[in-house]
Image (cartoon, rainbow, N blue to C red; front, side, top):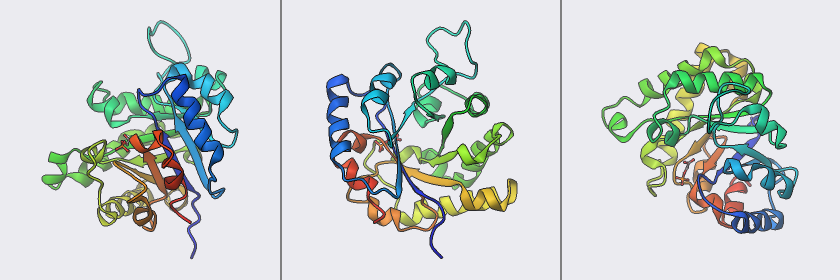
Length: 249
Ligand code: PGA
């Protein structure tokens, strides 16, 4: 049976780039060629959302890397889903491990942000993943299930959710999870969705892998049945990103 879920590749530029660098990324994205069967979204710094949206080919989605859980108000330094939409963008990445671990965002706040972003009409990439010590003490499942469970009450529309599983020990470290390690967690997450949401969501929700994905390892990862794409940090800034987008032939 062929996989019913459209392959999805997100780029997460993090706090990198300036207009000149973004022009370079746009150039290699335009040149492609990009597999039309892959959905592509790039996550750019908030101040460049409008610039990126205006210059990136239309078929490539543009995501913010964070947002707050309210439409407007006295929240200095924050941006709202309404503002992201006003910049012409339809996506937001939430709960990235750097938000969780560098900025201390807890599960509950991330869940509320996901809920508000969905209510406001955005598509959302919530990120989950275990730390090295959690994996080494056999707590991976416990940790990722708890992160997913915290999101559950605020997910009003699963068709606009793409879950990113990103083991913290693999992010930016060059230590990619093996295809078997990643597949194992993805299959467990899908099973969890089947038990705790329903079969339709379990079958249709994209679960993408992130953590040191490169052109060299993406093809093997893309072959795994429960890996529906990638969230790519460092490699999304380079022309090689095109090869990752095309990982599933
Ligand atoms: P990396 O980052 O590909 O640079 O490891 C992945 C991510 O943080 O989404």
